[in-house]
Length: 276
Image (cartoon, rainbow, N blue to C red; front, side, top):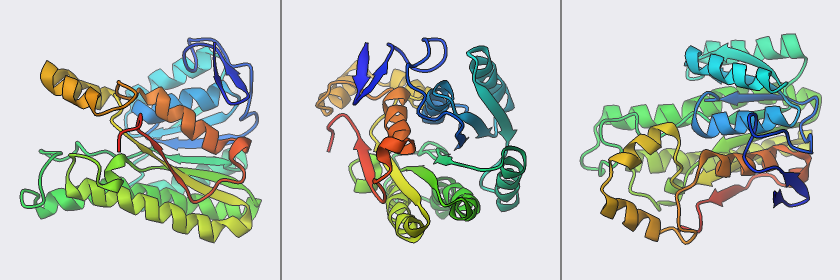
């Protein structure tokens, strides 16, 4: 057994590893974008495993179907939606559909983003093209804005809600990723603080996490292509001695989405194994 505060967890995470003894999200409606892979998938499994009605949003129908099968087999409740959250009409329509069918949205996790959508994710500023810059900024900021913009109106009406965004250590400048990615993730931190100030009087919190290197499927493929020496140097830079797994990030997101974090807002929590 491992423990997270007062919460006792079985070894492993989510469905397929036994159900938790706590149900922090019973009867909550949780919308997670980028739900079919990586941190979004790990978060989906935890929240659904603790009683949330999960609304899993992604552009990959096959991965969504696999996630839904896993959650339903474990006894969870899930609705899948194939939505491009970078499209304003689709994002707004997704929120309208969820509220129409489920009545409310209690939790929004904005997990769409990443650094590897351009040819060279480590490009220096003089090697970046304007197209690369625009693509990274849009991919990491636009969906977070559009979904927050649509959801927060409903949360204000409810008088409650929790929004969790995904930033990155790159937002602190502590990364070998591109300046475009660093700028986008710093923008997530600032956006999170501003939304927290605006939404707080309505009972809505907004927080973020800043992951270090996390071995999602996409990042893990690149990690395996590195030489053993490159891996060794990367691990030596992390005081805890290993890269993060998606579940390491998801557990902190789950905390921020739970009632344990009711008085936490406007913060970005570094989840980086001590690498600064």
